Every structure is written in structure tokens, then in C-alpha cells.
Amino acid sequence: MKRAYVRGCDVVAIFDADFQPEPDFLWRTVPFLLHNPDLALVQARWKFVNADECLMTRMQEMSLDYHFTVEQEAGSSTYAFFGFNGTAGVWRMSALNEAGGWKDRTTVEDMDLAVRASLKGWKFVFLGDLMVKNELPSTLKAYRYQQHRWSCGPANLFRKMLMEIVRNKKVTLWKKIHVIYNFFLVRKIIAHIVTFVFYCIVIPATVLVPEVEIPRWGSVYIPTIITLLNAIGTPRCQSSQELCDPTGIVKILNFCDMIN
Image (cartoon, rainbow, N blue to C red):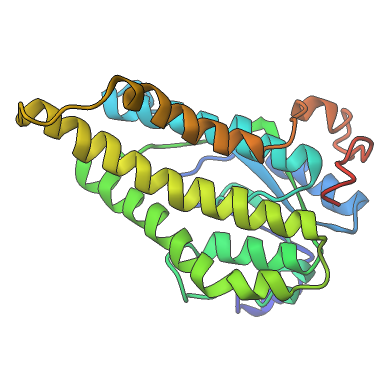
């Protein structure tokens, strides 16, 4: 990003090394930025080429499909907030620079950038029908490293940015509540802690130690409560096809007035 030729660009497309964008990727993303000056990011969906390799990759595919279909589609359709995935996205350079550029203060620098840009008043759009091929971690070591970064990084970022979000004057109170409660507190902290303790400690303990038992209500209500807490703050989502016409121009018709 510090190269001279990058500074002269209006937009920049970002991909990880294992991502394989289609030849028409820029044709389908850049028009959104050209026709909408308040738009900072166009985020594409991921398509996993090795999803059927093993049970672990199939489980990851299900989890990430929820992330794209529910979390990012909803945030995009209402212009509430959703994080940059770190790859398969096109940024407006002026928005990236206004947000302060990349910072290495956490292990989720992509999410850090997205939060800072959102606090500056920039908006993002997610294209669920534009998919970029990539690979899922297929070994336990790689998966553990990835999940550790995705779990600890957001919690650290939340600690660093909480007061900055609260004091920000460019976004509405409802958007602050959405970012703090739904995006960070429930999805990135509570859900991770409860899921890890319940599925990785409590349930295995009941199998290995006969004296340990889970109440029947716990096996039903604990996952249900986490799901409800997540759903409460998730705006109603539209399909991405309703958000754009064939030329790729955003139709700003049904935004959530309460969040905007």
C-alpha cells in the first residue's frame, strides 16, 4: 500500500494468496464504488474448492455460509455494519486513507480497518452472488491457528475501540449499539466463549467423567439462547440480487432508517 503506483489509484482490490477471482471480478465490483460516493468497500463472498475434503472442511463451510448469508447479507442490506473479511474485497482508496490505513495493533487488522472506516461514516456492500474461489484449512494445526486469531483478535480490538465507538459523533446511537452489542459482544465474545466451554469442555467431560451430567434443559436452552441473542440484533435481510441491477449500480431503496 506504500508503493507510488498504489497512491495514484482510486480503488484497490485485495486478495489472499490462495484466492482465485474470476476475470470479470472488477467489472462486477468497481461500478458500485463509481456510482456511490459514500461507499467504501465492496465485499465478495467466498467459494470453497475443498469443502468436501474432510469432515472438518464441511463443518467450516456450514459455519462460514451462516456468516455470509446471515451476518454479512443483513449488514449489507441495511447498511448497518459488517466487517471486511480481509480478502476478496475492493476498497476506495480515499476511504482507506481517511480511516487511517492498515494497523498492526491486533491480529484482525481487516476488521480493525472496517470498524474505523464505518466510524468515519463510510458504508459497505456485500455481493452474495459474486464468489471467489479459495481453500479452507484442512489440517487441525492450520484450523486451530486460524480460529485462535479469529477469536482472540476481535476481543482485543473491542477492548481497544470500545470508548472510540462510544464517543464517535458521526454515526447514530443505534449503529453504535449494533456494533457494540451484536457485532462484538454477542458474535465475537459471548458466542465464542460459551461455544468453546460448552462443546469443548462440558460435553467431553460428561463422556469421560460419569459423575458429570448436563441437565436436559442445558443441552437445549444454552444453544437456543445464543442463537436468539444473535438473531435479536440482526436486521431483516434482503437478497443481494435485490440490492443491485444488472449493471452493478446500488439501489438505495430499503435502508434501515433506524440504523442510518
